[in-house]
Image (cartoon, rainbow, N blue to C red; front, top):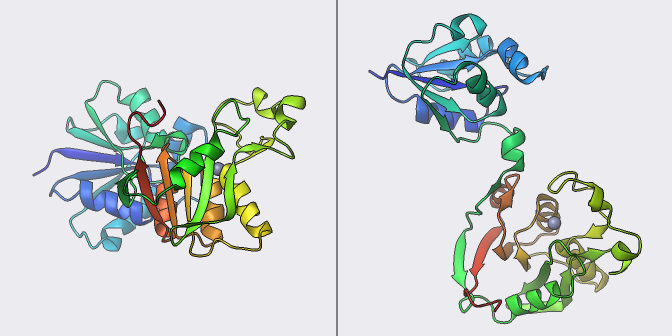
Length: 288
Ligand SMILES: [Zn+2]
């Protein structure tokens, strides 16, 4: 029999919750404890008016998962202090991290990194990008990477220079390359100042007077009377969530890149949209 307690905060039920429970509670005797809404609010200060109550969730989980022997209970302020001295596995989320910090700091806790729901830390985290394929520069379509980096070199952005190229059947679409820049001209950010000077890095991405390379690329293709349906796009740095959404909606079938990670689950977004992702590995001396 397991001497393990799994603690989690589930404001909703979805596939991530199902997979987490099936994986962590498969050993007989494992006890699953769901943080109740009162304790969650006390820890986070946030009221979740639409969350499923922990009591309802506890009552229904065994049936929902066809796990008749699932030992599921509600964790509240009363029984929190009466936990048996078992191994603790805690699902990553802000509420659970606050719980451990405040009440379980003396316990040996193993955090489980399952994706259960968005919280501050997994919104802000940059993860490695698990692409469908990894290829070397020699194995990739000839000339595309060089063209994209030539574009990136034109960028006036002091922070990050990115270049993007669209191609279909191994051929670059007419003039379909772009770099990130200010609008309406490359000099605007210097003449008027960059509004992001006053914004903390990594926050409030909408406060920006520049345009990303992929967005500009999309506009250039449209102005040329072409489209990106079934096309591929190589971008020097992995796309942000907004650009990934834009390219998906334009019908791009493959996105390749060489640097950067995945923010806000952009890797899952592209996979769900049926877009193939390719990492093009550049030789160590590529930029020398
Ligand atoms: Zn972007």
